[in-house]
Image (cartoon, rainbow, N blue to C red; front, side, top):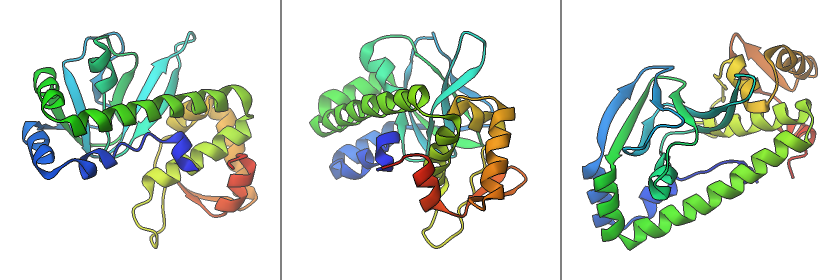
Length: 226
């Protein structure tokens, strides 16, 4: 059910025919980004698409009060920025690295060439784009219809999935409180009270900024995540 709230475009490279995958990887230009470094900014024209090799990137818009509303957090293995290229429009949001990252860039020229050369890549991108629209609709519904407590629980579950490395290893969510508040559509002070309650009820444990989920089943119930 977590797929209702995650783009998960990691399958694109895995499902490409070997020759198309090799061609796509040859076109990628790797660049290192520091934590808090912008990748692109809302309102600017795109010059290509991006593939996250390592690290995490937040995608957000600024609301009327000047606050960030985080729409999504990209994980390694995901493509992003391609919807603006396909629509031939400016970026509708801003993307910033939330930890040190390595991001591959593909120019518009190369992107269009591989779209024309690979029917598989075109099909997979269309599939991914369709899923993204459904995810965004689900996230908008969550923000408008659920309580802060429910939204925080749901976003902890989403982040747990993103930070999970191994099924046997302990998963630590390492997101700043301000970013977590912006994901849940609340302020830091309200988030702190909800986290305090979750910690008191032994649903989570905290170590500085790090959060560990202790009772996932109960958090699923709180988030109405069924």
